[in-house]
Amino acid sequence: MNVATSIGKVDYDGLIPNNVGLGQDERVKRALEKWHPGYIDWWKDMGPDGFQESLVYLRTAVSVDPKGWAKFDYVKMPDYKWGILLAPQAEGRTIPFGAHAGEPAWQEVPGEYRAMLRRLIVIQGDTEPASVEQQRHLGKTAPSLYDLRNLFQVNVEEGRHLWAMVYLLQKYFGTDGREEAEALLQRRSGDADSPRMLGAFNEKTPDWLSFFMFTYFTDRDGKMQLEALAQSGFDPLSRTCRFMLTEEAHHMFVGETGVTRVIQKTCEAMKEAGITDPYDIARVRKLGVIDLPTIQKKANLHFSLTLDLFGNEISTNAANAFHAGLKGRYREHRLDDDHRLEHSTYPVLRLIDGQIRNEDAPALSALNMRLRDDYVNDANVGVGRWNKVIESFGIPFAIKLPHVAFNRHIGEFSKIHADVDGMVLSDAGWASKRADYLPGDSDKEFIESLMQPQFEPGKFASWIAPPKVGIDNRPGEFEYVKIA
Ligand SMILES: [Fe+2]
Ligand SMILES: [Fe+2]
Image (cartoon, rainbow, N blue to C red; front, side, top):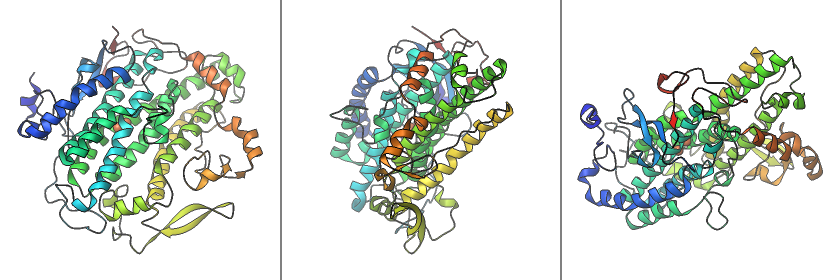
């Protein structure tokens, strides 16, 4: 079927599928075509290790309409159609916040904010290939073909998100945009000399529980940042982020349901073996499942690493980006205030005389904090669903997100140690309790021992339950990846 003619919106015939009229924009088309081989080289070097020839049952966007968004088909990943897809332009859109609130949204880069805007795009862009790099070795230990396919789906879409940001750089920022687009292919997650820009994107994703936690917690930071950028007065950025959010939702689905299935399997195994004490760790582990306290430790780790991505609680950069109309708040349009924030305050948790206390700060300076608060609320929703599963087995245990001061490396609380309840600890106190809160060597070794691939269609590794429904409603034994 010729998709381009049936949808009429996305030009699917060229090398780069797009709905931005690339065919009529020779300059940008050429710049992107020049960038493309470097991208493919990066993908082959740093993308999924060992599965480049396999046929993967992937969805590809063929339209940006809510209906008929995607089609599913077997593709070799290097042949995936990475494209440039923007949400439709809203007629008469105005800048929703900041000093220019109410003026028509910018269709071109506002000169006075050029550097700030480019920086926002580059930082967002840098996270996209970083996560692909972090996840590149996971394929070899996938617990099922279903999970393997989901991993690759997330990976190709993060690749497409890089394309989305590179398009903005190439189209709107001339020579320095092209240089930034190159540099995005040069940095490497975890590299000592040329690391990715943000800390959490230089950490390892060593096992599948980490992958699920990452997609639950860290992709959710991605969601919050995209939501804030989707409000932007620079309309092309807003439109590209709005479409990226539809893909991001799937990444968080993979994380949330992944952790749910791990918990489900642990509870089932405990029930079957007649184990009621969740802290009977040795016995639980003998069943080939991951004990609940270790799942909690992984959540503590990934949640706290992700909080660092929100930056300093009090931030001039965040204030400037809002004031300029470039980066808004989460669901700005639903907030009922003046959308300028020049005279309002926001409560910020700070370290005051060695104590963690709320203090009112100018709302503009507190925007990182506000986005982080929205994030924590959002992250708690899925945790509640995880706990429903545990509850349904009558096991006395609940996953709980740690206090925001716990295990921080950026911001107010990087100077102190705090426990998961936000009690300030001495260095010695932290040293003695650290292993109760964060995965230690023996936890890592145990999880690693479980990471044996299960590539038989319809089968799952010992430590994870099958999903409730298949991708694209496919039956249980469906061969999501034809490994070559
Ligand atoms: Fe992304
Ligand atoms: Fe993502």
